[in-house]
Length: 124
Image 1 (cartoon, rainbow, N blue to C red):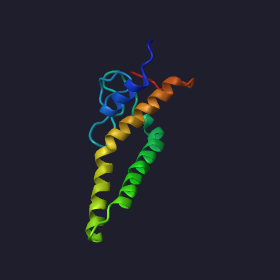
Image 2: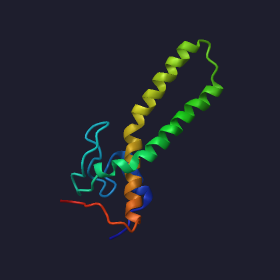
Image 3: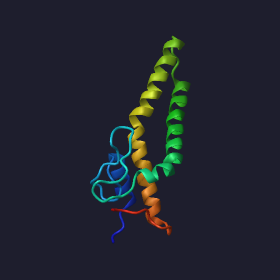
């Protein structure tokens, strides 16, 4: 069987598609994972625990962007600036969640495909 490239797997995850076949959807809705791919049976929910590190790191990266931005923006009204920062940061985390989670699922899939450990069941 031909190995899939990392870029293909990551692109599929970013689009919210199954990293294995690219046809099934990873998410039921914006926040809820499907249990498995409807096309090839690749498991998603069993991978969710393996994605926490990537999710924490990407959240830390986004937080870092906001912190760096605070060094360059000097608002006149700090109360208003705090509200803008609050809504911008919450909005950024909510809007990027499925993309970050899809990437995390894809990275976990890629690592598992390269490892010598037994694979998670597909199909069935």
